[in-house]
Length: 339
Length: 298
Ligand SMILES: Nc1ncnc2c1ncn2[C@@H]1O[C@H](COP(=O)(O)OP(=O)(O)OP(=O)(O)O)[C@@H](O)[C@H]1O
Ligand SMILES: [Mg+2]
Image (cartoon, rainbow over all chains, first blue to last red; front, side, top):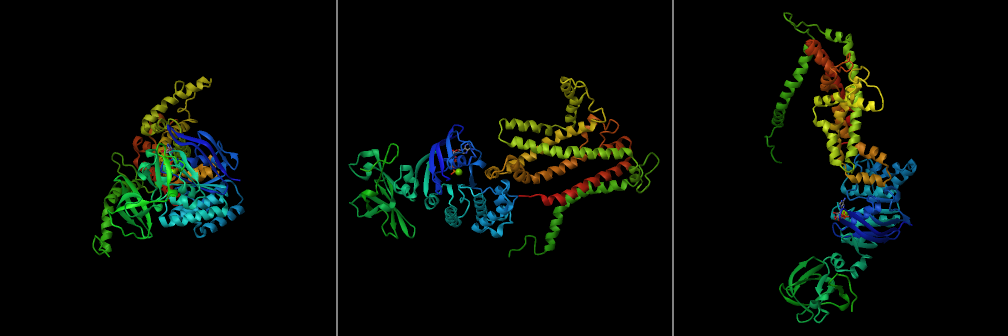
């Protein structure tokens, strides 16, 4: 068993609280993405799990063992750094078996694991090179190789793909996911890219200012955002948020915000639904984004398949099914039960 | 293809290159190569005195040298001095840099403290240590006195004088070399240490497998400087021992000074200088051809 459990973990940097009573359970063999805007404490949380930082409060358990006070080496975790942290003076092979050498794993076993990792990652031809002689994607693979030969049950990755170009990133996304499932690793993966989180992860943990805003499957976060922050962060373009009074006359006034995803809104003739004016159309090929404005104040995005031929400045009506509506309390932004 | 800015001939470009090198070449030739050759030339002649002009004597000076016990003492002292200063000052510099580089309280102050010897001129350093070494009243003897130990004439006794001079040199040089190590250490990304730590490397293994190899270029640079300094640094001898007692602290360069400017035997001094020069040249060649290959540059 190699589940990871955080219980009310706190980390302060001087007066700022980077991680604020975070409690989190990651099941064995799961890929969990830590997602959130810059500075929300994702890296700090990961480093706390790795033991590179000490927790000020709370406990961390890995595989049922309390590791809160253990040094990194004894926690049974491997880590891939954003900068890869390859040793520049060692060859690819030496980099990969560094940990095995240090831990005095017998030579034959070392070789077996190196060969297996090189095979898995397609590094066979590069084993004698130094990191400086590799491309970004190849370095990334070496860093992965170093993490998997340790055969640690838990692997931590801090924005491992952020230094790669878009195409390679997509490819590596699939590779990392396949690797994780093949090896049955528990993987905690930090990213600020929601596409990465949504496509790879079993569970997504969305953080904000050191706290967990929502923890659930990608579908849960998308379909039932727990707050206006989640609603705005997950999904591109973001969910439309309107004061209750504007969205529907006679609603319990301004204490409620109504959220509707762009793809759930339909455009109809003016006079029905919510009156709005079409401002611009962003044509993306397979779909078009219609940017409308209601009441000269609220911007509403509508996503429509294909190409839309409508006149800019035209008056339209916007309609959506009642069950596509999300309701949030205006005061604190939390989701409230639909009536 | 665009035309070369200097026209179409490779020859013009070559001339241009040589012209660019000329100023440096002239300076080197005038102030380094010519004096070296001239020194060698002078070493083949007697020293002119009064109405006796210089006379060609071939290798006589070199033959005299073999029979000169003070030369052998100075050479032997110099080798001991080199052995006693080079590695200890490098090791001390590295240790201090690692210590200062770690995240410890009062880091800035500590850095300044270690840096102080560097900004002091060697003569001033020698004066400070002269006080430390003073029999009875000096710092060392005061401390020894606390434990009831007898006074020692550190600089006046042939057994301890060279060691005392070595200690001063190490103290002075380590602070200087530490600056280079500190700069190099700051260039090493902290993730490398963290990655090694996660892989299970102990502090000791992290140093020998990661930090030390990455410091190799700095070590080579410092090593060359330390070696050259071991044959070049004699300022403190003028203040502390004047080569005494009984030549116990006479180093090669100090002996050359004595022969050339106290005994005014410039021909012999030139011959001694040639020995010193060839020693340094051998060291430099060894370093560049042998060590260079073992160093990883990023
Ligand atoms: N070593 C440190 N010393 C002081 N403050 C720190 C340190 N490391 C992080 N912080 C602060 O803690 C907070 C969280 O930082 P963290 O690096 O965890 O953010 P992040 O979510 O990983 O952001 P990013 O996406 O930009 O990497 C930030 O406010 C940051 O300034
Ligand atoms: Mg980060």
